[in-house]
Image (cartoon, rainbow, N blue to C red):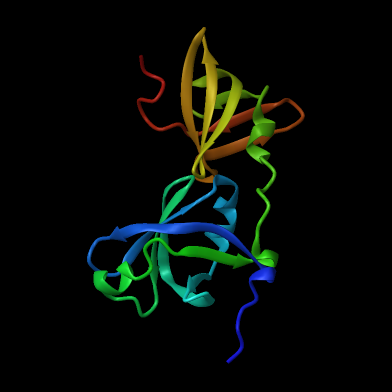
Length: 175
C-alpha cells in the first residue's frame, strides 16, 4: 500500500465536532484556504500518523462561514464513526491549494448602480464578499444601501460608462 507523503501536503485545518447523527463533521480551516476547501473532492485525514483519503459525498460540503464547513464523507454513516475524526488534522496536496481568485466584483467600485425599474440608485462605494455572497455598498442620497449581487440579477454592465443595471429585489430600496 502506497502512503501519502506529508512533505507533498499542507495542513489546512482540523475537524472540530460532529454535526447531527448521520456522520457529518465540522471542518475548521484558515480563511485563506476557503477556495481550496470549496474545490476539494477529498481530504487526507491523519490517522495513526498516516494520511488517509476520505472522499466527500456529492453535495457533501456546506459552508457555515469563511472558516468552517460541514462535511459529509462517503462511507461515514454514523455519529459514532464521525467521532473518530474529531480533533484530527485535514490535509490537501500542495498542488491542490487554490489561490484566492481575483476579486472581479471589487472592480465595480466607482460604478453607478441602476435598477431596471427605478433607474439610478447611486454610486458603488464598497464591495464585500461574505463567504461567497457579494454585497455592494451604495451611496443612495447620502444613505448607505446594502445590495446583494449575483449573476442572476445582472441586467447590463457598461464598462465604458461605468454603469451597472440590476433587477433589484422588491422592497430593497424602500425606506
